[in-house]
Image 1 (cartoon, rainbow, N blue to C red):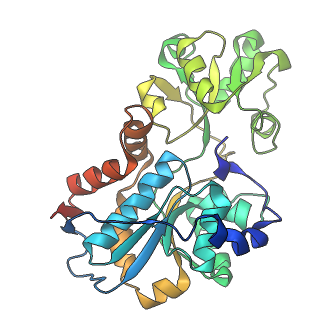
Image 2 (cartoon, rainbow, N blue to C red; image 1 turned 90 degrees about the vertical axis):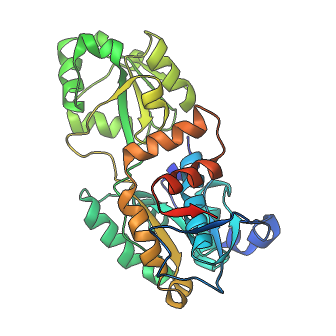
Length: 326
């Protein structure tokens, strides 16, 4: 399971923060791209600024971190690339401690993992507002979120769905009552046992999937099994995963809003933001353009087609007119 899905605050986070300098955080690569302002950065200069961008170590978050860095670079900043840090906590602590200035974070991760709340807030905007307000005390500034929502979902192959016509998780619940043996599901081990995973979903939707019909496996295998095998009618997926479209899967709507919102938003070390408030004008238009569908396309370029995250980010920013090649 992706490391950012950890749902409890690690007791050793403070100790980790002290150890960051010894585990390679001080290393990084200067961004040397020859890029200039497009739609962004023309009137928002970062000339003279020296900024560090970071990210977690999965494709989507690396792409988003690269986008921030490239936009800063186009606006005139010297940028140090410290993306691809292991797990959520190391990237988080880099922002809190000021060892990094900016990254994209997810509202559900902030609310549940970092701030320690057990119950997510259903309304995406209210959850972002709550995270933004509470995280101020940690020296973290949350800029407006995108509609990119990398949350849990169940998916079914289009081939199998031609028979069952499932659209929502309530449809799955109805099928479990009508034909229990038809509902087989492939999930990761952790998702199978957590209250905010399969057990909670079953309770919220009033469904009961027989234990024999629940198959546990690594995340990557789930997509293959749902797409190409008859052993899994349904599978646990992440909504922005590029393999959803590549493998012709239908994502079922969480019509009761059980799963937490994981909307991506830029988080900035507050002292940095106070020094360079123009950062908001640079990143707000980017976030406004980022959607779940955009993320699926970009993630597929890395995870399915094998492209480099930096080049994927750069090409897309140029295509969108946010920056221009020098």
